[in-house]
Amino acid sequence: MKEITISVEGMSCQGCVKSVERILSKQEGVKEVNSVEIGQATFAFNEDAQNLDDVLAALNKAKFPAKLTEQTFARQLPRDKKTANQDTCIS
Image (cartoon, rainbow, N blue to C red; front, side, top):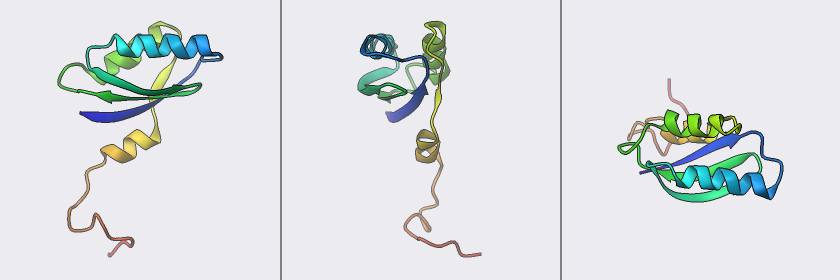
């Protein structure tokens, strides 16, 4: 299970926020919608149950263009266990 944050365009009111929340909660891979705010959504996602591209496509189809945020990319980068806690890079 991963926490995913996406940017979502096209939300201009609380009705839009509720629509995005509803679309996300209907997706097979979305296990919990943690937060939906104008411009952004965060949810718990099971990638074994569904492809994340399908979730983004469902939002796009409903006229809410969505994409992964830099925050999500940063959380998904593999970390070397030896250097994970170091603040400086050693060349």
